[in-house]
Image: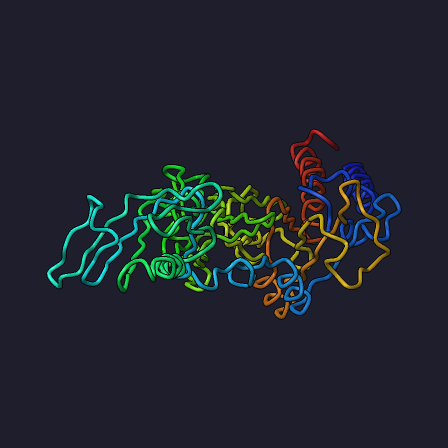
Amino acid sequence: MRSKSVLQLAMAFAMMGLCGCASYLPYSGPRTSSVVDAGENKALAGIQVVDVNYALARLIKDKLEKPAFSSLADLANANPNLYTVGPGDTLQVYIWEAPPAMLFTSVPSSMATPSGSMMTAIPEQIVSSDGDIAIPFAGEISCSGRTLTQIEAEIRQKLRGQANDPQVVVSLVNNYSRSVTVVGNVTRSTSVPLVPGGVNVLQALAAAGGVDKPVNKVTMQISRAGKVVDMPLESVIKNPQENISLHAGDILTALYEPLHVTILGATTQSRELDFEATGVSLSQALARAGGLNGHEADAKGVFVFRFEKPSLLPQWPHPVQVAQNGLVPVVFRFDLSNPATLFAAQTFPIQNHDLIYVGTAPITELQKFLGMVVQIVYPIQGLTNAGVLP
């Protein structure tokens, strides 16, 4: 009879703690209810809790999507074949005179052609800092900012009346004024001269020996006239329209920047994941962590913690309060028990340094509590059966 009373007393103490001792049970992080109530908790004022559906995930994806190289009109070289000369370039000028050739016959480099005309090769000319070259009998020829065809036309025009039916050909020997600089995670940093026909992103990268890191982890960046635009190298390779022609003075940088996301809570694996420069969705990130833990996870409590710009959403759940970094602390909530939310998880873009947290299901807390009760009750029952307790 006494043993029964002891057992009942133990059960009574256990039941008294059913509601109050949950906070003393082990758990891996904030419970789903704590996160959901963050927006209403005065101690956590300023944190926005946003429920995500497919439409919102699509909106956020579009807002966070960076402009592609081809989307900026002033970044694409509209006419790469229109090569213009600049100071420092070296030009070679050839002049033909029809018989009877008289003007250049005394020049040592002159020679007769089978047709009877006289061809004269003017010594290589370096375009001066003023943008000019000097041609005998034609004087100073302005070259800077002009095409080879335009330079030929001016020389021919100035020789008319002095030479008999002059014909002129100007060729580019060395290009020092118009080049692209390639730096960063490449085999060798180099300066790539631009040529008539243009040099595109992948050609410039090939001239630098290619990247020295995995292609899917490299971002290409173009700097021009104070503007900076970057794209994953993998996207440039897959989309020919992004492989744009470069301009003189462009700086092409290959950046190896491993992107990270931290995954915690009721997943198969809590870990930090690297992902490729092209990005991953929430569903991809969870899959790489082994998915939700089927014994513990609360499918209604999948969260992404992130700081965002106040302009990300047209309307927030609560009045916006920015942190010291000028950004809004946001918790994006996904209810994966709703099949429609899976489309949102497939669309929602994960950003660098995001934290993904999966809450623990309420039944898990009950299971832990019942396990504690069993540990209390069964030892007492065992002692009674052994005769230790009457």
